[in-house]
Image 1 (tube, rainbow, N blue to C red):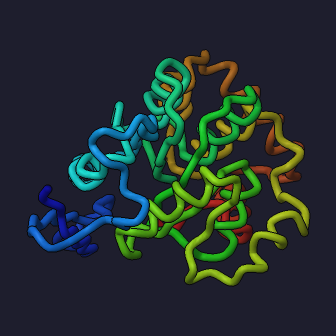
Image 2: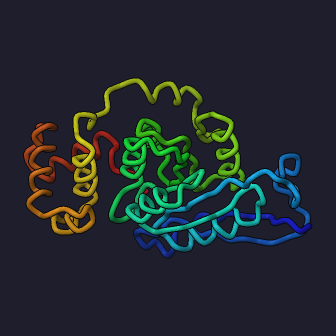
Length: 256
């Protein structure tokens, strides 16, 4: 039975903004994916179902090609924006969803918050180029089950899925272990905002205009303005530049 040797190469694409990484999949015959735990073709163990959500198509397709060769996993969908990810998770009910932080229409953090507020059982793993400590802690506080840097070894995502499947919360070995404890310490700088205000906040600091936010969140422009006024009042901020400065100061804008 042939196996694949996968090499992930992260690089800037001609220094163009918005480009994350490229994935190269190289097939050989001498590589085994954790052979002691690999399921046999006749195994009755149900494979773990996965959905990938990332706004870069080359990233999605690369990871789908990579993990489709692992008999323990079954990729049942992929999408390129947060709203599509939310709908796909709610309708297809995968065991795991692997999501990026920076996605159009709805950010990864808000996807996590919505699913957790609805008590959806899907396990959520964030795969991102942003892996500074405040970002990782924010992801874990939102309710993610794991965080894996995109520029890490390919095996870390499978390790994360296995670890979470066994009941743990996974962070990359590159992070200090006490980060899992520190996620519960310190105040959430936007903890006073409602779920909808969270969404509008992240859209605003991402540079979206009110009409774009209204379209993305299926709201009227007037409702967006109301949420904007409420959240700024709660944060004691008077204008949009002040809101962006607040987000930067509190590491609420992923650096991807």
